[in-house]
Image (tube, rainbow, N blue to C red; front, side, top):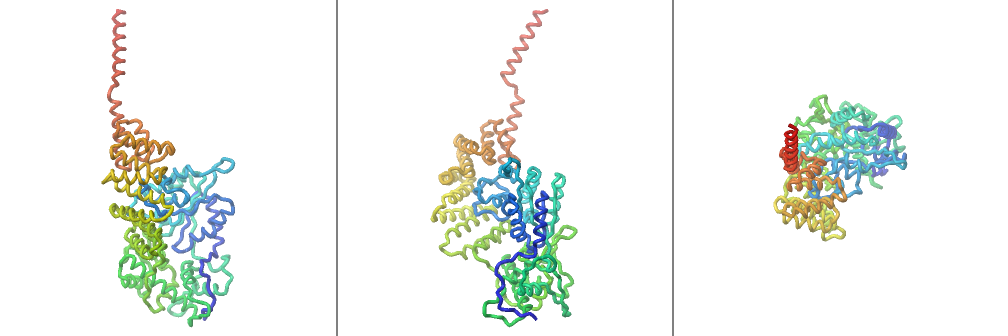
Amino acid sequence: MARVSNHRFPQKSHFFGRTVEAEEVARLWQECRLTVLHGRSGVGKSSLLHTGVFPALRAAGARLLPMGHVGLRPMFPMAALPEQNRFSFPLLTSWYPGESPTRLAGGSVQGVLRKRLGSDRFGSPQRTYACIDQAELFLRRSAHHEQQRLRFLNDLRDTLAEHENLHLLVLVRDTELHEALSFAEELGGCEISVALFRLDLLRLSGPSALPDSEHFADLLKELDTVRTGSGHRIHTGRLDPALFQVVHRRFPVEAGHVPEETLAQAVNRLLSGYGSQVLATVADDRRLPRTEVEAWFHGVFLDPTAGRRTVTDRDGMPGTVLRALEDHHLIAGCREDDGAPVYELQHLRLVEAMRTTPPRFVPPHRPGHRARLQQAVLACADADFTLARLHADAAIRGSRPDDLQFQAEAECLLGDIAYEESRTDQAIKHYEKAALTFEALPNTTAVVGQLLTAIGRLTMATDPVLAMEKLRAAASRLSHDPCTLTALGQALWQTGQTQAALAVVNGILTTDGDNTEALRLRGEILADLGEAEPAIRDLFRVDHATDLSTRAAWALAKAMCQEAEAEPDPLETARRATTARCCSGSHESAN
């Protein structure tokens, strides 16, 4: 048996064995308007792009947007913005990270790209390559934002139909492949070319360009070896990249120290410890008894008498737990014919590791406070607000007392979570605490202004005078910010200062004539003043069917126009009467 040597395995992830796949994905992306790259969790879809596909396209001089994501959004008080789509806003801020979020808020993907997709030096539209990671976040149904999700899908569809030089690549897990195919089929009617590519486990033979290292070869061979109960060894010829990362990041070898165990024993111990840690972490995150989760997992996947190795969300654990285990690469998801997600063990090598290694207590895995805050952002994107709050609170507790900026950012996120949950009072408290903390730091004028804008917007419904004070203070810091100024215009209108509100909104539209929120507000004010036709002109340019106040303003303006058409114009009536009398007099003279 191979024994663990004192060789130190690299501590950074390695990209190898994917040259052929990277070239094929790059080719499909260049040839087709929509490319769907799918595979199980942890198979290396994102790594393939970052280390293989992106460099190839950049070397060819392609115009490539940064990796897009609908779940990761900037640290920004969301209540400071007008109603924005929960999917398009983070996507646009990830594609255009250098732009102020307020310039992207409220905009559709189609509208934003219409302004920003450039031309080449000859004036022709330039081909642009864009991608969206973790597309399952907007392809699966949303319990909290389903209408916004559907609008986002329509927006994405319209964007591809309009921009012929936009080539989109989406990365999605196999569990949501059915939804991805449905989206692609709808694009077929628009004559948009579609390609599908499945990234499988890494081949350990053939033209895979594996590292030329004896130590790597031993480790890869061990990860590929599955031992049966009768002592036989099966070599699958496939490597699970997620298991490889788990083992080589945790390899315990230090210079001058050689554990007295075989390589197989070391791998078993590392995989088993990782599995126990994942189960403990997922149980702790969701306030479930650890023993209950462990007993369920062992009974389904490790008991040789169980007779089955797949589960759904109807088999003892909710879908959120199954997705969390999939996120940690302990299980992998696929789709049955009826479209329901089905999960199985990530790799058979885990069976041997978790069966043969004696169970031991492993505490939940808790990363550093910054990673914990990022976990809170992802949980918020998945509408798991309880988990998001747990991670954000823990991130604050784990930070240094003098790291005021991080604590302020975490308080801002807690305000966002409360805002998402419609807990307005709590959101205001967290935003106020974040603003006070940022005030103690240098160069934070803008972020304090954004937090004051958020507080002003949340206060407007109950205390418009206080809201106006907060928004004036915000405008003194952000004198050209359209979101802050529009909110100030709203507060001025609500406090009876209609002409001042119109002056503020007109100023916004002078520099940005397409500002959706400003057009909506001016349309509502004009309808309230009885100026029906200009109100309709403004409201016609925005979505006037979703917001209640905008819908009411539209109905009022339309009713006023119809009433004006029904009532005879006094001048026109007098003119017709005069004409009739003249015609009558002429007729009598003729007789």
